[in-house]
Length: 311
Image 1 (cartoon, rainbow, N blue to C red):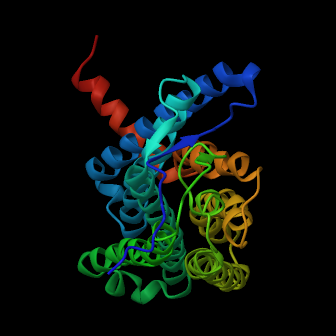
Image 2 (image 1 turned 180 degrees about the vertical axis):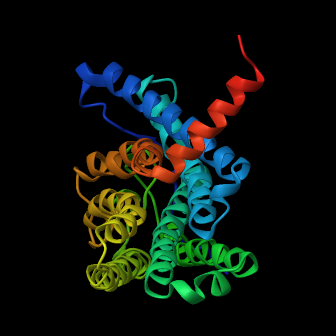
Image 3 (image 1 turned 180 degrees about the horizontal axis):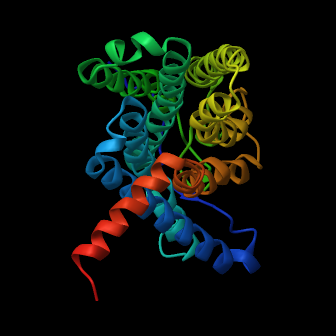
């Protein structure tokens, strides 16, 4: 059988932000700082949740899973961005490009599903407090935690495969700082309509549906909280949801604009900085500084440390 795929491209050139010559060093410094903050901040959250008994609850179990996911998610794209800004390596081999594409989208979609799962946990805790501990036992939480990963890696498989099967005969310059679906599809020298439509469908399933679920559950939560008579009860209920709500707004705000469209644009890479660099760097602060239980646990561990190791 004759091979009908006329792909001759062996590698892609990632343009990154080469048009912003004056800001290359500034972008590098900011991206490196964001990466370090994200990695070490999320490692600190994981350690804190594991060590402090008061944080051994479903909510903090899912936050620790989210922290692991954030480290993986930012590590797929930001090291590549740093390399491009240093101009040490702007090319990526053909198969490596699609490996990065699949991993990035799978982890991103996993994050979308996990964020909706986390608000479902808060919904049960606030709307069904008497049965919450019975329903959300450790075994059930572990099973739930697997579902976002299965969903993310499954949903991203088909659009990545269809994009991989397109013909690439040049040019090979990707107007982005990592391999993503829309920028690569634009380089195809054949009709990319079906791969583009499948990409939009995958985005609707993994981005829009979870977002609608989150909004619906939060409406139910707000209605329930407003019925609470005591001000302290309302404040406590809102405080457990506020950090998650901020993370959702930051992540979905840019992700929906980028992915729920059949064609990408030149500005997608700037929006991508929001959910690949800025938001992951802010999340550790959001989940600690806006969470009284985490702050108290951190103070307790630090106090114990200094008592055991006095100067």
